[in-house]
Image (cartoon, rainbow, N blue to C red):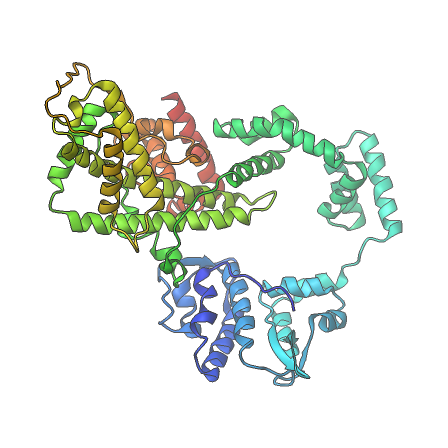
Length: 549
């Protein structure tokens, strides 16, 4: 049995499970509607998912109307949906004109490889599960193949006219390349010239030359280990990859790929923990859980940090202002915790599936999810510290700010440790956030201050007690939050005018500063109606402006 194809759109991936109890005729109707929809989709266009699938799944699928997907992704997932739905229909090979054939049989008839047919399935060639002689197997109806041929005739002709490189042709290619390289051409230049002369693809000839003339695997690995940290450091300092490539004598594409590989290696060291909730597998969870209003609004409460006396006083002021909003705070805490766990879960699964040379968009999505989870965790930590400092007020008869400096710092460290433990393990389906934090804070206070001594002399602090409460909220924060140390500068410049203000607003949207929600480069390009390459360049220039500010 072939390996099952996966879905790139979660909203479609849940349809087979949701329709498991539907009548067989209803399932057949959905399958035929999906097959009819596929030829009408333009792979290069974008579609609103709910509108595109209205004829297939109706209005009860729970898909968010605002979700926009590419035609290429939609076609690939629809062909997978057709295959999955056909498995429950017990189709036979003679139900359609011309019958059905296996991938191997049809590949032999067309004169192409069976892998080519598998590749065509991602571009709209529908396959079905059929039953023959009591056995179930994947086959393709000749009628479906004829319909695909009508729309992709040129592609099929190219595949049929393709011929493999035999031994004699390979030797001729190698000799021609050796002569060009000896005359001073680079391996890539030689491959391009020889490929054009022999009617072969540039990439195919280049791969042959890499095996014949290229560096060994060990030498390539040593090169990666030597220059990998250098190109990554240059990338984090917003130095253009073209300049790095020129300095190292490498191609720009290689430098960019090496940066992505280094980013992927760093992400593999991230091992976030999360709480599994039953809502994570519901249809449309990707669009609803992280984008709930409470999760999108990342405005902090305003707890002052850096001085413990100011932090204690600001926590009292926050509790006084929000004394009547306990129910609203509880709902926001639960929503933010659920979104945080969902993002950590999605990022962790994507990290496990990372390839050795990952795609840039995949790495960017993982980093954005982790960055978003960090912002939510920071809000929960701040909220928990306000609660914990309130418990300290009740616990200390003289007020925590009247403790000696060393005791006050030790108490703050204990409360921060307790708060982080609660935020990391908080399950919104089983606990109340305020109660969990209060219990953890009371336990930390009881350990740190075993007796209340109201008669002790109160310490007087003339200059305050320097100590940071809202620092790093995860061990892997530095990996995905490179501008964290410039966050205050960016937020201060956002409301101004001029070049620095424009750069600050762009970076605030990118990294989630000033209450903004972190965004991928692809999403920012869509919002600004520009290309990913131009948006990447604008972000690099903005980082350079902020570093000079």
